[in-house]
Length: 224
Image (tube, rainbow, N blue to C red; front, side):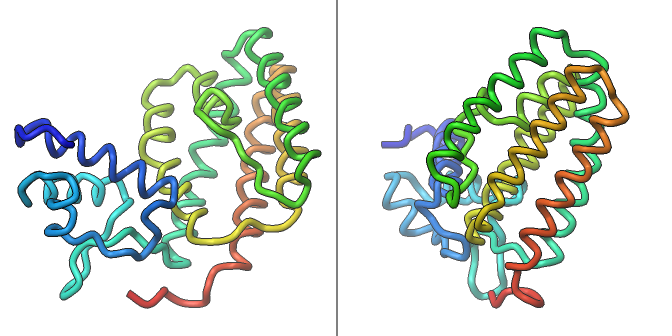
């Protein structure tokens, strides 16, 4: 049960709803009615409304006229804008990681990719799963860049939206193996301290990921 105090209730409720959305327990496009949510969490509608507004600010919930709140559904334009921002930010993250990361950190990144390779070899047609922040290639690089503002922007703002976008569209068959090779090339550039190459390869990697996803996006905006 969510705490009854309004100040803490909305925060705890927001965290639980965020988890439900990002794990797919609440699907893209699903309505988020204040009344049923208030009943579910045994709170008044005030904390529910505050939590939904917070999630809307994070790009995970949208409010539509005559419908109310629902889990965000990405249009093709939404997805393109997200990937353009991602390419700009992550190429700089890779550049700074190559300049600032120690050899031990870079070698740890390569060791992480060896673990990823084992998972992909076991399920070559499956998704490229990276469970947990410490096991996510892109989050590790954001940490290695040693820029807290960039790290927080990527980990707290951009990546949750990206996770929701991926929930909306199925995985591209075989993309995991290609992505792994691209990750390995980026990691090698970081290990060698080649900041320009690391940035270039990261940008190409994000653009490749976008091109793979773009073919699955519906033409035009999804129906509300």
